[in-house]
Amino acid sequence: MKFSKYFMLAGAAAMLTACSSEEPFVPNGAMTEEIANADTYALISLAMPEANGTRAAESVTSGVESEYKVANGTLLLWKKGATEADAEFVTSVDFTGAWNNSDALDITREATIQLGFAKGTFESTESYAGMVVLNYDKSTYPMPKKGDKFGTWKVTNNTANFTYVANGLTYLTMTSSPQYVEDDNTTFVLVDIPHTSVKTSYEELSSDDVIDGFYVHRNAAKISVTADGKGNHVYDLAGAYAGATVTVNGWAADVKAIASFPVQNHDGLTIKAGWLSNDTKFPSFKRVHWGKSAFYGETYDADNYSLINNVNSFPSYEYVKENTLKYDEQVYNRTTRVVLKAKYSDGTNTGSFLKVGNTTTLLSVANFVTEVNTKLSALNIDATAKANAVNTAGYKSLKDMVKIEDENGDEVENTKYAAVALQLGLASEVAKELAYYVDGNCYYAVRIRHFDDQQAPLGKTIETADDYDEVHEGRYGVLRNNWYEVTVGSISKIGAPSIPEVDNTPDDAETDEADALSVSIKMLNWAKRSQNVNL
View 1 (cartoon, helix red, strand yellow):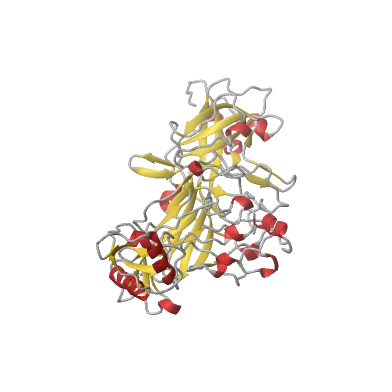
View 2 (tube, one colour; view 1 turned 90 degrees about the vertical axis):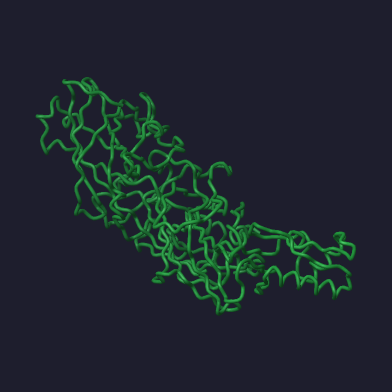
């Protein structure tokens, strides 16, 4: 069935309930086996703007002070071609500047920068444009080379960090943000640099020569986790787990893209398809709210993503590279997610314990061994089960957890293990259906969702599977300069015993005879979106 991979749980990976409006499209509302047999569910709601055609959040926020500090900057100069993609790189010039607070909507900081180019840089018969990069390390950031085409350079994979470390501080790399042009329904990154604004000395520059239109945004996406007013992050479980609690004590971003582009790539994205902003709230700069990430549309390669192997802290936030996906690529081993770590407590089960199959009963290892021996007796098997030394959490088999010996101390044959497994409700003696929790630690996984089902950007009726695919392309994923805040509202069940696995379930030149240029650069706010999760 086409949609089943979007429902599958790896352990207790978060998913949507079958009856919610957030449920992925299932023809005729059919219940899938994966939903019916799921262990943990997540009901996710998301605030989105009312304006049609935008996939960005309505609210914006400046974030924390460190997120708009600038250590260095450079303007990249391009000789214009027939199209923006044809622009040819000429040179770069580094700068510093005094960044000031801005009162403009959606802007956090702005600066007017004076630049000096080597004499002869500008040819009178050519047209020029520029873009800005802030907080970069020349040894790792993929700067263009003379003669490079903009269209080729802008989609060069960058596996270096999107942060710049200097003098013990960390700065976020920023590049020019694409702008939507309503008159011709297109977008651009490069800003025209008219010859009239280029002077032969700094003294000639005046406020009339300042070139406006440079807007930068952060190349990272930001993720944070909150507890919906529960400062202690303690949640009361429900149903069969009523009376028990879990305390969320750590989280980490997972399934992170290892590469990103120097600038946000908007090639082929149109307002008609709901990718570009037609929002009138920011008339001076209509931002492009979506873009293709490094692996958008590519064949899956595990080496393109990094996975975590532990969760040992509760950070205030984490930065990740953007990871947007086509609809059919939105699967567990490609979609950036948050993994929560929690401590389970019910007053009885302390230390390490087991959960058998789809049951809700929790047993200490000693009590589980007793249960196995009870089954052996009921089966008239003259043998005794003993606990194996198991030090790692996760899903285990019957043979992983116990050794069954006959009266001579010899291990019994597999058929007797199989008979006990059947009595325990397990598929076989080697089926990994025993959830083994070490020290009561459990884990929950939440895929980061860029927009809610009910805010599907095209606004069309979903009647077929193709309709759903078109409307929900890019629904799951993270975009640069977007802040994803996951709020944990409630938790009703114990999580997975280990981190849920993922699978394919869907220049420089300074002379005394320099040309001088003055540009104005504005730094955009974070676009913030909130994701409420009930686990």
